[in-house]
Image (tube, rainbow, N blue to C red; front, side, top):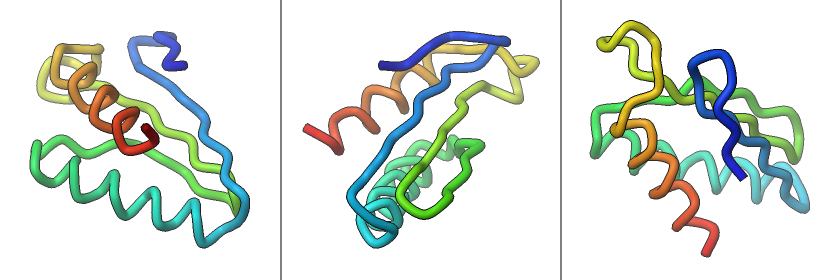
Length: 77
């Protein structure tokens, strides 16, 4: 579940291994590029953490972040 903290949407994802985590990141990257809205994220082995905020709006959560979060969730469905 996404959490809104410090003017960002945050979610942590865990996968079976690095390959699955990296494949997920690739799918997220494609969606982010389509929206021209790129996440702040980290990846360590099987864990991906994502923070979303809109820099052009002053680093706050906007509808654009919520839309990307929904697209990311749909990748897991």
